[in-house]
Picture 1: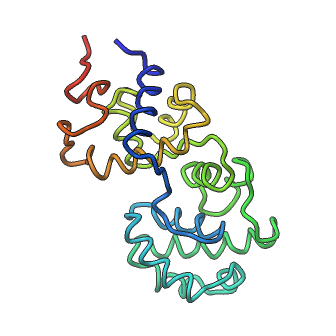
Picture 2: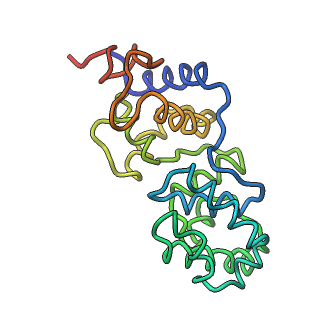
Length: 215
């Protein structure tokens, strides 16, 4: 029986072989664009966010333009992402905060990121991993679902608790890419409705697939 740490290390290696290019699915060119896209991705698919942000970043091409806009103007564009009013208010407030407190630059520490309006640990971890190359556990729906199915955590669904459980067992230097690969694997193979265990690269180490079973 593998320990959670051994299982995590094996999953990191197998997913790296299966998905050598671990990239963020959200499209961005500027640091704050990744921050905003991640906020928009709450309860929305990355594919839809990428479509919406094409127009969003054309109409509001700078952080200053976001800060000066009325939230209602932003809401009109981001409505397809859901929770439009709340997200529009957060983007407007975050733009103002970044300009006033950080000179328009997205900060690189968890403590500073969590002070930005609308930013939680999921967004902060993504920023730390993708922009700053720091260890990061992004507990989105794919990460939570696959971590439970594989056996890295046991019945834990709360993002903060999943993050706390994964940090000691996932190699820090691989953690950010590992989470990106979980997204890719969760979309293609270990889907929410029906996991395709027969073609899963993790089946030999998975607790709920066709591999190792609990005693």
